[in-house]
Amino acid sequence: MADNPGSLPGTMQAMVMTRVCDLLQDDSPLEPRKLAVPQPAADEVLLAVRACGVCHTELDEIEGRTPPPHYPVVPGHEIVGEVIAVGTEVKVLRIGTRVGVGWIHHSDGSADENLSSAFTATGRDVNGGYAEYVCVPERYAYPIPEHFSDSEAAPLLCAGAIGYRALSLTGLEDGQALGLTGFGGSAHLVLQLCRHLFPNSPVFVFARDQQAQTFARQLGADWAGHTEDQPPQPLQAIIDTTPAWTPIVHAMANLRPGGRLVINAIRKEDADKEALLSLSYHDHLWLEREIKSVANITAADIREFLQVAADMQIHVEVEEYPLLGANRALTELKRGTVRGAKVLKVSSATA
Image 1 (cartoon, one colour):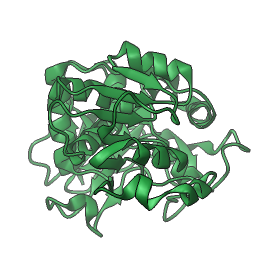
Image 2 (cartoon, rainbow, N blue to C red):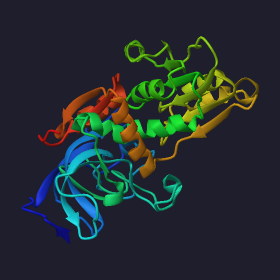
Image 3 (tube, one colour):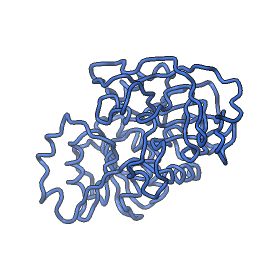
């Protein structure tokens, strides 16, 4: 039973996933529905959702690469909301606090909780933020720095925080060259993060379209070219945020001996999987080049990154949509050019 539930409405507007579909064939993967407002468990808080980012992982859910365990489900895991009710065992968060929620909904609380079998994902295993209200365990709700608006904060909860984890997994040292393959919601934040944490490291961006390349240069990239281009120098590390396989092969060719490719993706699409047949042990893997994946995220990643992002006043480029415009945001993410991050404005509240 929640404390101070106030006069909450009985129902809420939500965008609901009911099936797997191909977003190149179906431009309405989600259905608008009225659902009952959830009630927080003893260790949970109830949030009035203000904004929710639109992440590529939602495409993986909708297209069946990481499908929900049950239907219907409300997607969305880059959530900013206001605490409006608390469970009886909630100890710190208070009504009125603005908090964020990421991909991790719950886990075992260990240092490796992102790898645990207890890991459950927001917006896949449980209902997420494409709705007016959502519940989350207190441990996995994070106060949002005042510097950021609701829409600016939303992408920080996943695109930014998982980018922070990916950058840490590169093992990069200041002065070593970093490459970013794909330049969307996560990479545009990682570029700025690298500039802050490793000011002497040149950053090279690989992107399919010229608009993304131009945007990368505007944010301080030392060089920007096509995915298949060769950069001016071999790179110590590359972070891949694309859904494709072809960039993997080209990225490995651009690593210096001993370099590391970090793949920041929950799943990869199969359309160009045959590109892996061109992977050469001698040209791409030999001389101790390595590949490492990013698996989910921890609560510590999100807390740490939010503080770093506030300290450096990171710039978050966003395009806003109404909640009922979720299908348009998703299909544009799948089919079109992306500049920064897409965000659903769920309520009229402002930070």
